[in-house]
Image (cartoon, rainbow, N blue to C red; front, side, top):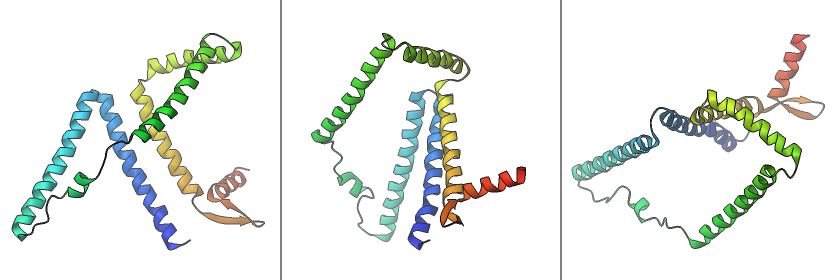
Length: 185
């Protein structure tokens, strides 16, 4: 494997773990606190970090007698305005999805196709049981945890091609499945 590719593969799990940890923390916080409290605490934590960094840089500049300026100058000078073209594109895409949703809802709720409407009724009936056991945030936490484990399993078993059988490469997952089947017999 090339050295650059190996570093890229090694870096992705770290970034995934950070993203998972932060989103999991937010979901657990929303499950236990109100959304207003969670947003307030997140903004307060962000302000604490940025104010501390700004004061630290100011003290370092005073001690070293340097004139580096504001530590966030490049971020403050960056243009973050939203162009009208990007808003139009986003609005057009949203309109397409909204029209599709409205037409599907009308088709299902006004029973254009009996089988599809019965499928929707069965799914909604099952959702009432799921909703009585779990709230929405719990389901989101379970979904996120499941997606993390799924991505980790794919990374562990499918990241390298190590086994070659008759000129074809198979992943470590296939090798593991072959070993488990032969051990079970």
